[in-house]
Image (tube, rainbow, N blue to C red):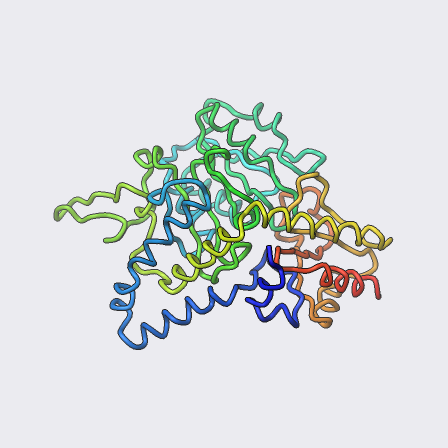
Length: 388
């Protein structure tokens, strides 16, 4: 991995320390150019006409995403964001009152609110599985909680409020053994881990373009295992997701495109395809190793600051580091770092009501690193933190 060349392909890195990749990463120039070039093409020839001329590149998105996830192109749907992709999956199951969905304390806030909404609409039951002392879902309790009414396990692979990686493959095996659907939110893991949907045993996997894939905002995707499609019913359809076969009948597309809309952010899809190819060219294993190296260096340096507390606990850590200082609120830390040209974000305690490690506590600072960050940036980050 030629870090210098990679950083040259993203000019902001020359001035800005961007440790907010879990929010939205900095895109390579090639991604931005793909989006802008297409928008200019629309100006010149018209929107439908531009999409027609880029049909090959738009189709290539599915092949690239399939290569990234080790699945088939027809198992991929382009969706406007990860939350809508998650919604599409959860509402496609034919629920009955009393059916159970099992999830963990690290579930993403919007996802859990979606479960609460589904519960009100259909009468399903939510079974919340506690975390173990490593802040990972307790696998023994998960297995013990499954009943004859259980139908799905929904898991967030890496939580927004905590960098510990959840044991998704083990959870997938449990789901498979009991004949349950497994929905994996890979919003924070896509682009920083090598994800294989077969090794993960997931039936659905959703993600976004803007985070570790370094793609455009307003882009996302949904993987749906082909063998599950006959049992599903998309929450809505249009002339792209289905064929109007007669005045009073329609036929769903036989692949994951049944979860798509005709109208979409075409420039974004092209940009996301470029971002995926960019990641594949570097290699996901290399990306994961580089992120782990940078995180280890950061944690080691932060350990030397006596008043900084790091909140990750497991041995399986991602590029997300959450921390706090007893005498300085997260908002003050965030503002002080921003003043020094260092982007971070804040974990709002109000958005982590399931996580007993945070619930009732103060907000925390989140630093999220990517492979294009440098050792010098880590030194600058630690120096600013320690200067107060």
